[in-house]
Length: 221
Length: 273
Image (cartoon, rainbow over all chains, first blue to last red; front, side, top):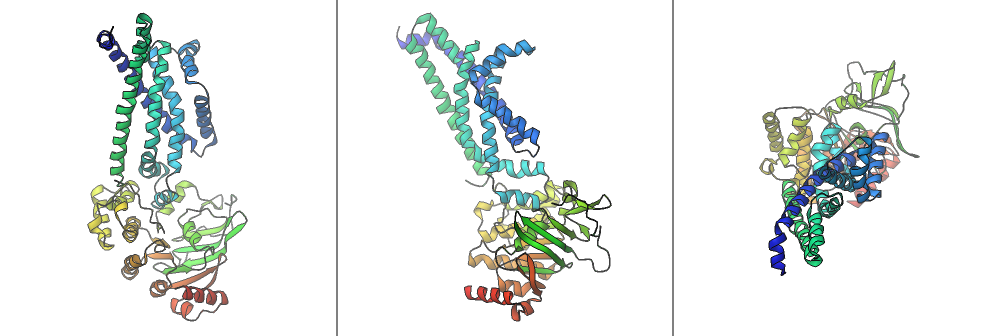
């Protein structure tokens, strides 16, 4: 079977798998960003229990394996009465894991905003919430975009693990095709190329574009 | 910060000549280092007081404490007759909470050495930020107020530029307009010309000259520009070691300094320039 014949036969399944991978990536990214912002801010809180909570979260989700976390969420949580559908369990695990990494990016970016900006906002008598929302966070956001680009690529690749709980993503389809045809090079080679295209030609250009747009908004362009 | 109740300070200043700003026995320490040492300083309404002195003498700390950027160790600061660092409570004065501080802070505006304009906002957005998001003015009114002030500081034609497109002198003029847009009773200028190239210092000092000439603002200024201080101040305070070593009318302090440290400082400054 030539590679073209292989593609003609299995192309639609690679497409289906890629769509699921894309959906997992988008949903996990949304969750990761929400968690990262929340935990990053909590790490900077003045309240010790709040700081402590965020630290424990980050330590647990950064310090243990994503695969183990995925199995926990899918196989162990039901024992405590929390059952998630496999598709949901997949992006929740990936999002919670990458969110812990993102929290440190958020925290670092907020701390990188010059002290003078905090002082100027205080001199204008802004409330702590207004200071953060109007002055500090917009500047921190621009600073954290480049490392977020990296993290989102990590996240995309991390979604391959959801195939292990039978979410029919790109990796799952490739494995299925491999086990029925034994055309390993074609099956996994195609998956490899698709992952590369998604990160290199979708995520990276999107982040570059976002950086340009934000830089222009900030008057830096 | 003192946690206990202070009972030997008045809850409010009363009488005919209540100063706009009063430092009453104010001490500020960083660890073992005493930056302000039981400082007493009154500034009358409408008065322009300039603080000079060697670095480390505590002059910037005076402004930062008034802006509530630093906490107080001992003593009380009053603004417009009311305590700033403390609030009435428990039969005396207790350290001010955040809510009280926010109320009192509205009286004070500050300009910084490094301008600290918000880089993600244009000149006019910088000026409108406080009026809209702190004072709650309608946008149209805030814009009118900001345009007027930018006009006054000669920056009306750059209103839609971001700070990155402005020179240091231009940024500082916008920063002055931004502080004034909040209509403070007391304005603080913390070495506002120190970070500027020599050729643009004049455009900033001219704005401050106009403020002094045309408005009845109470102003406190820390500067190294002795000539400028001499021209526009009602009173000059020479700080040394966290205390006022000597103070007086500019012509007296610069023309005929009484204390040895003042004489040394002024002749050292003269040699350097």
